[in-house]
Image 1 (cartoon, rainbow, N blue to C red):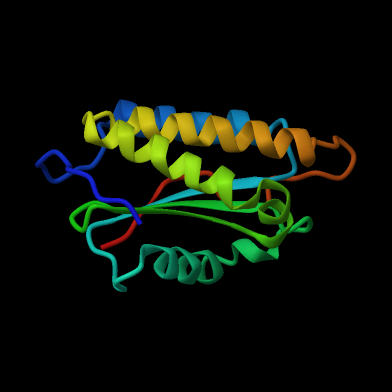
Image 2 (spheres, helix red, strand yellow):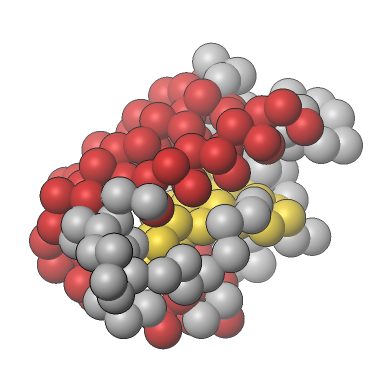
Length: 153
């Protein structure tokens, strides 16, 4: 769990920032069989954002990927919490240090009001890890999950 400050306003990203994030997801996913999703909501329904990320991961059926290599980037903006949740296939390879380092990078960017930049960095890092261990195979791979950002309540 990490804490950080957010800018005021009704939208977390500008339209341009959101487009860049979706494009980064698409660019990462054309190099891997892995799947990356971003979920932004105002409040975390649980004390621990990792629990919320896990709940969302399963409710979004991200565990249904063939290689069990989906990753969820979770942000609760008003509660100042973030979490990353990787399915079994990628979590076993990455290990806890990778996820911890990514959360540290993400929250560091958030402390500097660089929300989109932090998420873009994490997407790129996750994409590189997925590409290394789950490279794209033209004959079998398909986009198993939508690439859009999910905005909760």
